[in-house]
Image: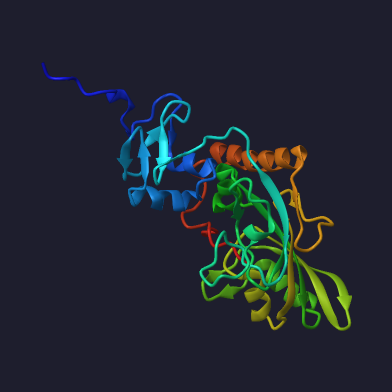
Length: 282
């Protein structure tokens, strides 16, 4: 007698069922990798679900039932997450690893849980960075559709007049297109130079520096002071701290509020209105 196939219901499928979640999202939420890297792991055949290698995108899984492995190691599905605020110093790379062997933000935080930086600051910039293993929140903070604010303090050479500040606020042309409306205002003056307060929702590569360079006021120092509702505060350079429950709740509220607004106005946005912020780096 021919033996029936074992556990056919547990084989990976792209058909959504009650309680199922896309595999790459589960991997990101578990802190294995970012969503983009999780997709690469799947495409490379490094992920198994119930013993079956998965290469297809969009496979649905149930984390409380399915056995998920990456490179042969079981993925631990955590219900809790870690959220760390770091004051990144100059001379530190804001990625999880660096091929040149330079110090990264991961080297500055505890290694008891695998966390990833949310967005980037360039090598010479400093200030607030969020590191977490909550892939869903990281995605909502970075994805253009959620339009989360980033606030910076920029020390520039000289003092830009109101006409230049107005131009920056309205948007200027860069090599990768016109910038979205933002806020640029003088915070204080120091020996002929000026500290500017900058608030924007875009996150193009080195955008603050390029905008100010384009109008003739190059940046001498750039510090990120806020990401969405999370503020740097008085955290010393190179130091980290865990977010308070209130800070985590505020971040969730900020991102979920945007999600609800998008749902209620679905179809109302013009195609191409937002830019990719996966390379958010200033």
